[in-house]
Image 1: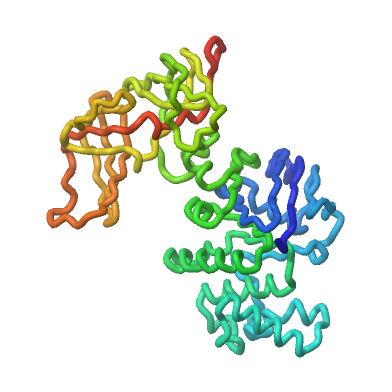
Image 2: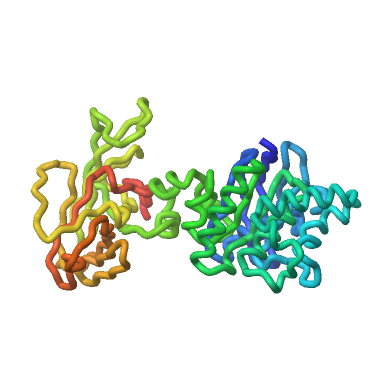
Amino acid sequence: MKGSDVVITEVSKAFGDFTVLNNVDLSIKKGEFFSLLGPSGCGKTTLLRIIAGFESPDEGTVTFDGTDVLPLPPNQRQANTVFQNYALFPHLSVYENVAFPLRIRKFPKTEIADKVAEYLKLVQLEGHAHKKPNQLSGGQKQRVAIARALINEPRVLLLDEPLSALDAKLRQHMLIELDQIHDKIGITFIYVTHDQQEALSVSDRIAVMNQGNVLMIGTPHEIYESPATDFVARFIGETNLFDAKVLRAEKMNQPSLPNMDSGATEYMAELDIPNLGQVKVTTVDEVKPGDTVSFTIRPEKILISKERPSTKREDINLFQGTVDEPIYSGFQTKFYVKNAEGALIRVVKQHAKYSDEGPDILWKDSVFVSWSANDGYIVGVKCPAGENP
């Protein structure tokens, strides 16, 4: 691997009375594609600027491969930044923009020409070397910015919302290209975004941030399937999230969750959700009767039908309701199903087959929704039994 290990330890930053970062700890591995994900104002860009050297923390340390980089100016940190607004020189050609960092370092002309050609080829802009930035599309401008940031051969590339100015289709295309570039050069990428799909698509690991705190660090699968907090569950994708009280919880003799650690204990819990009813869920977290917890179930894991399912499995949760709102979007339909007590469940049904008559479930239809106990998830205990909330 050509990149650096980046370790952020107890980093805090405030602007006046406003705390932007609160005792942040992160350990980013060499060659990793690591994303900082969160809403606007959560502190992710400030953290990136501290890593780059454009801001100084009030407390804490930042190291590259064990070396403290806080005393170093940005140009000595072996880290380059790609900005949201490209930051190209409008009066210079594509060639000169990419060559600029090498000219500053007084590289020989022949070496500059060779390296510029190499990096323009990397970002697929070989035929655009003599154009000015105003002759390029948004995606081409961003590729120029990436080539210029990489030509110095940094060990860490910092990307601050680099695709947010592009339209949706071009953003998806550039995201694939960015991932391919990372695979080719193998350095550490630290990517700031507020877009969950971007982070899930390309990251090796993700840190979810909110209000200056890191709430969870994990792989895209861990972040999506096993959110650590209510906020992570709501922010990553779409979900059904309910407060619930634990009625009972029993150890299971045969683990049913996939990829279970052989030494882990699995429980079958029964929850009571106001206005919905009793729900079964498997969990590896020990919960006790009387605990108040958050329960989440992703819309795509719920089955919906007009006929009552015939299954007799004991681990299936089954409820009846009325379609309050169907939203058809071509490849899927999202249903908002409301029961007699007013509980609302979001369901997503994928369209895998052609249908002459369109969706067979319509507004105001009476339907059944069901899911396995394995597909729900207890986000966390909010109020342990025997304690006051």
